[in-house]
Length: 110
Length: 111
Image (cartoon, rainbow over the protein chains, first blue to last red):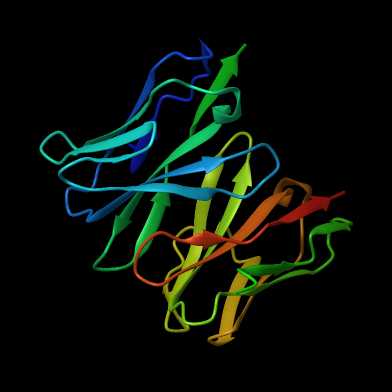
């Protein structure tokens, strides 16, 4: 079983739609969680951290469910510029190991 | 801050040749990571260092791969001898406790 699993997609949604991704992780001792965004032929970039209480950054909302060991990302009012691959990231703070999921491809159509 | 700096940006070499990839982490970051990304396998963690010490190299695919971090501002990933299946984008990333910041990557092509 992979340490971090994501639906690879692609998700193809119209502009303005709301889209959600989930991600599951296997290590219950994981302490920190993030969502990264990667554009084609570019490096991954930190989108937002994920906190236990859930957190929001503009149109983006991230949530963590420790009991079920999954993380979610919700994008509201999607824009064409949101088209990218979204990577779920888990960190074991005791060892500082950072593991990436394989990513979910999102394509926003006009 | 210039961010994480990787060199070269692109490397084309022939099978059997030695390849050395270089990384300069962000000053003050105490963790450094080497990742490899391919379409088939996604982003794989090869090895990471804390305070210049290798912590986990279980992701290094074979003995042909080696990584060093002689000081806090420099790391290398070496492949000797290289093979066509090593072709990928190799990313270096550094961190200071939270999420990691990535370099622009090295696109490696082994012919």
